Length: 179
Image (cartoon, rainbow, N blue to C red; front, side, top):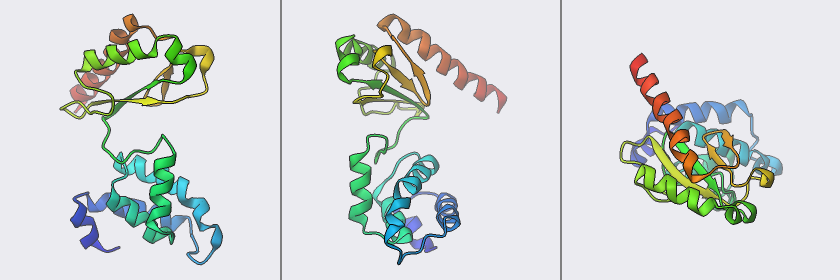
């Protein structure tokens, strides 16, 4: 691994080494036409490691999987799951699909924004929380739906926002106390 590239984009060398080991464990043949089939899997791992997928990470993946950078950025821009900007430790995603929107998701989003004093696409100053919108999570019967990290909340109302946030604020405090 070329450590100069790591330093250029200001991300920890250890994270690149972890990603490099993961890609190596897949034993991808750069001459195999099927190598692009590994791209989503590698991007998921990279986003788990770094929290987001900046250009430097994208280029690292492209080089190590043996695909053009344009293929990597194309996959990232196509799938809503991937992000090129940092997210908070606690990620709040509000579904704005048709069913959720009709049932008040816009008001729920506004309440999260008011509560956290950040807007859609932003991260709180302390880096603990971020808010974004999703187009559809396939849980229309639970509309409006909010996903906090990997936990799904259904039939969310503006009145529940404070209770949901209290769970994650208390979780942060509990983890801080254990340190």
